[in-house]
Length: 479
Ligand code: ARG
Image 1 (cartoon, rainbow, N blue to C red):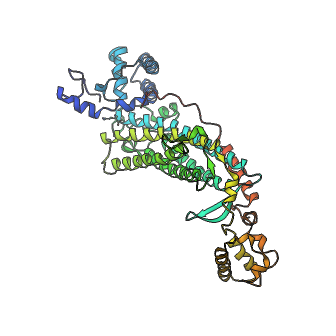
Image 2: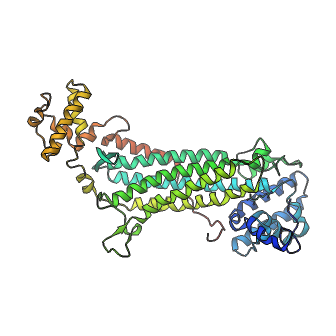
């Protein structure tokens, strides 16, 4: 029910109610739902006409009025008013201003409870699709960079515990992020299926008493189905929680990548250099180049996690069905949507323009003893149990550390002092190229496996479709 305007134009009973009015109004942020709200109202007007609640002429007048309102908002001359609380009432009141009391018939058989839920379903459906395309674009940037450094392959240390462990292909390391993002797209696509539902027909909570066909309205709005239960339809915010959860996991991945780019940009690593367009100088230290974009990608994860926790907490104690608490879903979701729309493209651009210092990657492998496992494997191939081989090679490495030698420098003769099983071909197995070439099982870092992996990544992307659609203005104005 739309509350009747008070004499002074507000929803609360006295002049003192202005504070409450400002406190409860959502128009400051839910105005970005105007397209969805008008689309839902047009579909509802048609449903009322089909049900015989409105005449065809009445429905026409209402729809024309709504279209004029849409044009006003798009032009930026719609009079948004806080005393009308939210986008739904702002549009309805404007409709009455434009077409008279007939405008008051639009809300028949509907409530703002199913209306706001519908708006969020429609809004999220669009946004998730755009975000899916933006994730795919970042994946494409990663695959392109991986491909550029695959022939000939750039080798680098792979790390565990942030200690140099075994050499890997730089491309292999990048593609690890590709597959994380592939799972993120899977989660978002799954969430999209449960977003693609219409709550219309639920009305306030118990269902509408008018003979409308919610399935026909859903179809008209391009939604795949309807809720089975009206109480659930108006109080379900799972689709938003799922989106926030998927976004939070996505941000974990982007933040880890951001962190690696920060580390790699340091003098200690010196593996990469962000392009000048994505780094700044320090205002005081002339020699510095700060990886700001990568840092802020990492930093943005915090607000996304926070919004997930926030909405989970809002929802956890609510009895059925609608409560004004649920109005808190919007700023959380909008902020996460806006954050992803910023983070994904800028990170893709950073990756596409990244300067990779291949010689530094390779130099980090010199003298790091990361072929030790392969030397042990050599002994295993000659019959020694792995645990024993591990011990023998441990002694070899200790010797290297004491003598200031690199594992790769030791001759077969020197190696034989530790075990007679070492043959003339033993020194060759510790060369980083030999170490990566040996990891030939599926998913391993051998160049031919990484080439196949990259081809599978390209296939997954081809199935994902084209670049992100042009973002249209949300009408929300600057936030
Ligand atoms: N502004 C409200 C929201 O964002 C719309 C629904 C209000 N419904 C109600 N009965 N007060 O959730």
